[in-house]
Every structure is written in structure tokens, then in C-alpha cells.
View 1 (cartoon, rainbow, N blue to C red):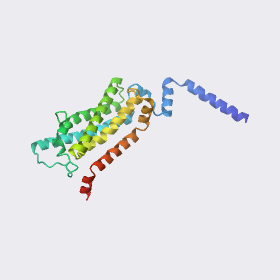
View 2: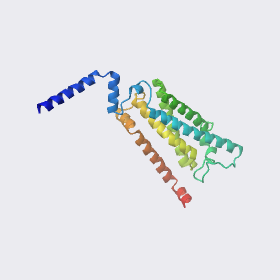
View 3: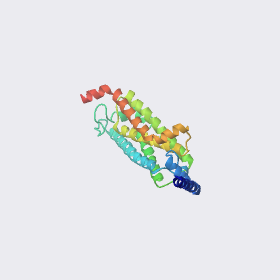
View 4: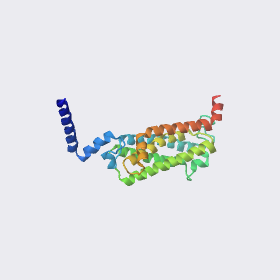
Length: 238
């Protein structure tokens, strides 16, 4: 009994000594492994997890492809209003009628041109972060503001597609799909590192459950599209 107790005491003392011997960076790294919502030293210095870099790169590539395809479609329609587009699948899903609406030129120029620039920037930021860059706090604030503006635009476009234009643009759907995780992850990582201030409970939830949030968001959009266009789906499937 005494031997076991003594051994436990020694182990405990050794553990305490080991902790005392850790440098500040080593202690922070140890705490980060115990609490996944804590920022790493790399994040506090302005860096980002590789996961975020890849999200921006992949999302940027897919979004850039969709935006460029929309630009090419607009050019084709401008030359021939009756041109057959590869993105026109049926009366509900297509981009031919969508790109001729005022909503597709909300800023006075084709939205696709704005998207091309935005996703090219997103791709560039992703590559820079993957290279290990540690941007200043203002950069993260600007990136978060840009992602927030993008998701606000997506909300507006979704409303217009669901209730005004009454159809779905395939390339726009790609933009929706990539913008949602980009926004959620940029906000989560900015809040985790302290670049953007959020209530602690919200910050922890956002960091821990960011992919759950993305999944729920996707489900809500799919359900909305199914319910709002229910009659059209029945006609197409019937």
C-alpha cells in the first residue's frame, strides 16, 4: 500500500516538474491539444491551420471556374440571344434566363465578373496561408469582412432566385456551395485567433462545430429549394 502510494506521489511530482520545465510555447502547444478551441502559437501570430488554406484554395478554384463559365455564357448570349447553353438543363435549372436579369447585374456589371475577381483573391489568400504566411490582424479583419459580404450577397441572390426569378442557376449553385464553408471557416478561425471578437460561447461553438454548421446550412438550403419549387419538381419528375 505504502509503496503504491509513494509511487503515485513520485509520478505526480514528476508530472508537476515536467509542466514547470515547459517553455511558454510548449505549454501553449500542450494546452491547444487539450482544448481544440484555443489558438495555436502560429494562429496568434497571424497564421492559419492548413485546413483553412485548403478550403480557400479548393473553394477559390471551384468558385473561379463557376464565375468564368458564367462570364463565357454571358458573352455567348450577348452574341446570340437564342444560343443554346450547356448550363440550361430544364425550365427550372438553367443559367440562360438567369444571366439576362437585372439581378445578375446588380452592381452595374455582370456579377460573374465580380465573382471572378473575388474567387481569384480567395485562391491567392489560400495559397499564401498554405505557404505559412502570418498576416497582420487587419488582414484577417478585412478577410472576414469580405467573407461576410459574400455570404450576404449569397442570401440576397438566393432570395431573388427563390421568389423573383423562380429558377436555379447551376453555376450559381456551385458558388453557394463553396461560399458557405469559406465564410464559416474564415469567421471561425478569425474568432479563434482573436482577430475578430465574439462572445466566448459563440466562439467555442463556432470553432468546435463549424462543419456541423455548414452541414445544417446545406440542408436548410436544399429543403428551401424543395419546398419553394415543389410544383416545378413534380412537373419535372412526373
